[in-house]
Amino acid sequence: MPVRKVRNIGKNIVGKFPSIKNRKMVSYESLIERDVIYLLEFDPEVVTYEEQPLTIEFTDEKKVKQYTPDFQAHFRSGHCSLIECKPERFASQEKNLIKYAAAESWCDLHNQTFVLAIDSKIRNGQALKNIQYLSQFAHHIPDIRLLTLLANNLRTPISIHDIIYAIDADCPSQVCPTIFHLLYYQHLFTPLLSNPISLQSPISTQKELQDGFQSIFPWNRISLER
Image 1 (tube, helix red, strand yellow):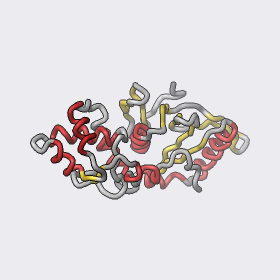
Image 2 (cartoon, rainbow, N blue to C red; image 1 turned 90 degrees about the vertical axis):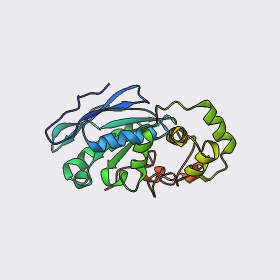
Image 3 (cartoon, rainbow, N blue to C red; image 1 turned 90 degrees about the horizontal axis):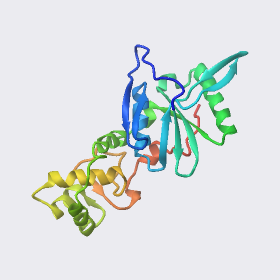
């Protein structure tokens, strides 16, 4: 349950995201937060997450202040991370560094990790755009016949174009949504960082082909960068 409401202060963009993992609408108050939600939804290691999860009190110049991180993510490993989303131009401001230090201290006490999600880093390369594209197929219900044909014909790596025409050359529009659905849930893999996903993209059952996601946001390893 969020400890405070998402606010529109005039310049930020607020909205709600239909979270599959949380089975509810998740509020965001910036486009960076929205983009981080896409990554949280896609990351198979993230079980659940919540916005505006808790408030941390800290002292600055003898004044008691409060700081609320943007998200808290819960991983399959049992680990948790607090996540703060910031534009690169604001990330190193002194007032923010003080908040981050308070968050790191809180995380040290509670065996969690503090993550600073900077816009330029999470939007590096094509990975985020590819994840956003694949998310359109998250609710697609695969045809059992196509799943069987894919399993029987998938000799990896192979291009999306070639597998489509190997199993149903007459109806590529029916095959593509199933492939993209499997890519989104990472039953199949394709390079994410280098190029936009297209019919020429290779797919494989091996995760090694997925070249970008962990390098763009290794959730369990990122700490505060100054």
